[in-house]
Every structure is written in C-alpha cells, then in structure tokens.
Image (tube, rainbow, N blue to C red; front, side, top):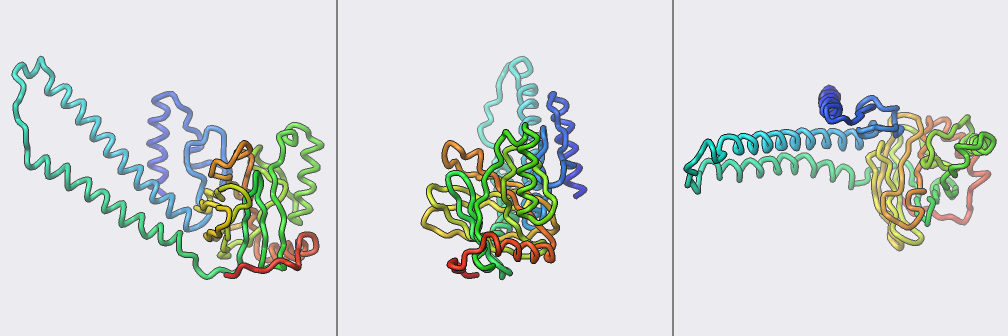
Length: 296
C-alpha cells in the first residue's frame, strides 16, 4: 500500500508538471469511477489486489527503463555530438555492453514471468464455490440466472439518460430498484447504473458461468479482477469473492455492436443474512421451476 501511494504520488507530480489534472489517483471514491480519475478502481478482493500489485511492479519496471533510455539518449546526443567529436569513433563492438543488453532484458522477463504465471493460474483455476451464477450477454443487456436458487432469472438493462435529468423518473427507477433489492437504493452513475443488479453475498466464492445469445461480449468488473469473454455456443467459467458489502460497477469489454457502451454491469454485494432474505423475495418474483443447474 505504501509503494502504491508513493508511486501514485510520483505519477501525480509528473502529470501536474505537464499540465494534467491528476485528481483522485489513489484516494478515489471506493469502487466508483470518478471524473478525471487516473488510477485503478480500488481492489475489492485478493484477486484484484494481486492484479493491482502486478500492475504497480510493471509500472516501476517501465518507469526505470524509460528514465534510463532517455538519460542515455540525451547523454549520447551531448557527449558524442559532432562539435565535441570532430573525428568520430570507429568502435563497432563492445563485449561487456552487448552482454549486458542481452542478459538484463532476459532477467527482467524472467522476473515478470515468475510473477505473472502464478497470477494467471490463480485467476484461471476455479476453486470450490458455494453456488453458481449464469451470465448471458445479449445485444445489449445481461441476463442473470441462479441455477442453485430455484432458477431465479432476470435481465439487467441500463438506466436511460433521462432518469438522471428528470427527478420524477429517477425516483421511479430508485423505487423499483429498492423493491428489487429489498433495501434502500440509489442511482450512482450515468451509463453505469442498471434497473436490476446481480446480487451476491460477501465473503463467498461465486462461480460465474458465461455465455452469449448473439455475439461475443465480455463480463468485466475491475474491482473483482474479473474479465472474461461471453461467447455464443460456449460456456466460460470464472469466479470471484467480494470482501465486503457494497455496489460494484463494470461494463461489457468486447465490442458487440452499436449499443456496446450501454451494457453496464452492477453487482450488489450483501451480507449473507441480507442475501438469504433477498433470495426468498426473488424466488417469488423471478424463479423459474423449469431451470436446471449447470453444475459446480
């Protein structure tokens, strides 16, 4: 965390020097995008934190390499300019330099590989989960099914712009969302809020089974470190676990047509007690007795 804040401070200083507004780098509103933000959404679980840490490591490596190359470039331009060297050097080989510029990049790649491969394995291997959620991408919305909870199923559609302009319309959407969640709810972000939300309990491993009904979509929630394609005719699997209750946002990350930008993902993480109450309420409204589980 100290390294992250230190690096964020360095980036902020550099951005300010070039006239950019570097607000909300490391202290952004938790799990929410902010205007002018220049940093990652805060991690909501171990998976996202590992990705964040890997990103920080890569940024340090890139920064050091960039500074070194620029310093070396300007030093060569100054030290070996025509005025300072009227007779140019005819040196063509230097064994030490050639050894260094071959071995050092290899060592850097080895370090990156030893860090990235365990992270990829951690993300790819789905652990034993408590229940599954089936996510189907459509043009242009998401259908969520709970095969392990009596086939609860509903479709999540973006809240229109008009609701963020018209107070009465906004109140209607918030009232409907409050009824859906069984607790007070508000719209937080234009183009990111939906009329329903995927509801899961905190501190629970959830398997996500992804597919699509038409074209390729991608289900992406940055705070969870989750991003996976939803492909028609195929079933992809991933998982996540949220550390604490809250509202988490994402978007479709695969260009899927004219309304690609209007496929928000909203995940409502509740306590296990509140989730159990929501399930009972949702069974009465959205359950489909004919739905069969895809298995865990």
